[in-house]
Amino acid sequence: MSFTRTLRAVGGVAAAGALLFTAAPTASADYIRDGQWALDAFNPQKVWKESTGKNVTVAVIDSGVNGDHVDLKGNVLPGKSFADGGGTADHESGDDHGTAMAALIAGHGHGPHHADGIMGLAPDAKILPIKRNESIGGDANNVDGAIRYAVDHGAKVINMSFAGPFALTEKEKSAISYAVKKDVLLVAGSGNDGSGKPYYPAAAPGVLAVGAVAEDGKVLGESNYGPHIRLIAPGERIYSAGTSPKYRQATGTSDSTAYVSAAAALVRSKFPDLTAGQVANRLTKTAITPDGKTGVTSPDPKYGYGVIRPYRALSENIPAGSKNGPLTMPKDTEPSAGAGADAPGGSPPASSAAEESSGVSPLAIVGIAVGVLVVLGIVIGVIVANKKRRNGPPPGGGGFGGPHGGVGVPPQYPGAYQQPGGPGGYQSAPPNYPPRQ
Image 1: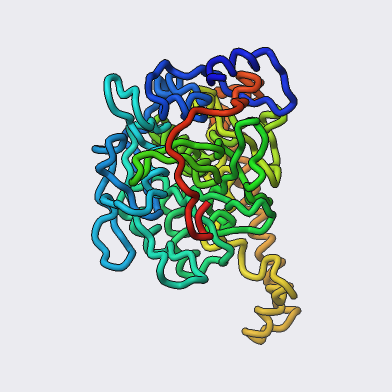
Image 2: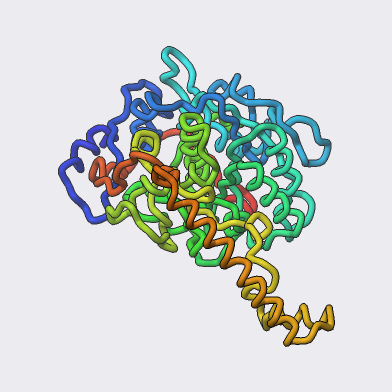
C-alpha cells in the first residue's frame, strides 16, 4: 500500500498511539523522496512558509560530509577534520554517516523543482562538517576540539549523532560549557541500546538529548531513555544521502537527532533573538507525546516532552521563557549561590568566621550590628517619605514574554506515522561501531 493510500486508510482511526502530523506527501516520481515518510509527516510545505533555516549554520560533528553529493552541493562549508591527516571535512568518500545526517538537516534535493533525492527539513541552512578523531582514546568521546571549533566558526546549532558509555572528560565538559556560554544549542542522540543507561554526550548537562519514535507512533524500542531525554523525533527506516551507494536507509537515534537539529535551525532562523534555551523551549512546548498529550510540564524518561512539531514551533505564540529553557546547565555556567550555601557539612557561620579571623569579641559584634540596623532604619524612613510625596505611581515594567497564547494543541493528524511496509530502495548496513546510533 502506498503512503498516500495508507494515510487515507488510517485518517479516520483514532488509535491510542496516534500522533500529530498533517501532511500527505508531495507527488514525486522519485522513490527516494517518496520514501521520506518522516519529512512528509512534518508537512514541509507549511513549515517552509515560516522558515527554511536561512542564515543558520549547523555543525555536524561526525564522520565528515560528502559536500559534492547532488542533494547537498552548495550547502556544505569546508569545515575541519580532527582525524589523522587533518584538512577539511567536506569531501568524505568512505563513511556515509555524517553525509546522511547533513542531508536530513539541509539537503535540497535535485532535478526539476528539486523533486528528486533527499530534502532536508531546513534546506537553506548551511552545514559545517567536523570530522572527529575516532581512532584515539577508546574510552573517550573526543569532542572537545570539535565543539570549540564549531562555536568559533559560527555554528548556532551543533548536531552530535553519536553516543558512548564514557563520561565526559574535563576538557569535554569545558567545551560544552564554552558552547553554552556562547549561546550555541547542542543536540545529541541518546543511543540505541534500548536501555536506561546514560550515554554521552547526550546525558551531559547543557545538551538537548533526543530519542527516536517509530512509524507506528511509539517510542523506538532501541531508543535509550532516562531523565535527560527532552525530545523525540522520527528514527525508523529513514532514507538519506550516502557516499557509496548514493542513498541509504537506517534506523536509530542518529536520524532523530538530525531532525531535531534541523527544527532548531528553523526556529533560530525565524527567531534570531531567542537564546539556545528559548529555542529548545519552543520545541518542547509544541511537542506532543505518543499518547496525545501536549504541554507536558515534566519530561518523561521515554519520550521527554514529546515529538517535535516544527510548524507549531514556528507559528504558535509562545512566551520566550527563561534563558536556559528546559536545558540542565553545566555547573560552571550557573551563577554562584554564595559562599558556603548548601555546602555538604556546612561552612562556618559568617559571624564565627569573622570572629576567628579578626579576633573581635561577640559583644562588640552585637554592638556593631545594632548600630548598622539603626542607620538602615533612618535611611529607609527617608526613602518612604520621599516616595509618598511623588505625584505619580512608581515606574513599572511589563512581564516576561508578552501577548502569547496557549500551548495545549491537539494532534494534527491521527495515525500519520502509521505506514506499514514501505518503498524499495537502497539499503545500507547500520553504522559499524558502537558509538553510533
